[in-house]
Image (spheres, rainbow, N blue to C red):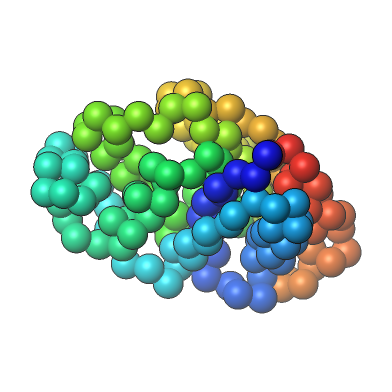
Length: 181
């Protein structure tokens, strides 16, 4: 069955490792007949959540008019969400953290986003895979809170320089992730 998949990226490095894995995933997902909509948060204007609790009261997800309001309708319509990002200082990059924080708007706005599938694609410089826990655990908890099913995670340690992902099976893992939707 064809699914509507939203991919949200958080890397500013277009020739980077997480971007390469994202491209591999999207290519494989589209080849399987899925519709993929991609949002690259590094080139979007997404602020932080102000906790004003006026979400969806102005006709937009966020009363502070930023690019999250372009992403929110796609999230509502999506069957699945894929978050792709590198690890920044043992955590989620700020570029994508604003989107994750603003998922709060669906709760406050009474919008049901339960039942979606979710996946994570991430990589880090260090060889220790636990370095990715600062990205993996918050996303897993976000999925649990929103009643999403985590269908897979691609976690690739030991890549720093752009293109280093080619020396791993990271892109193959990301492409295989498309089989789980």
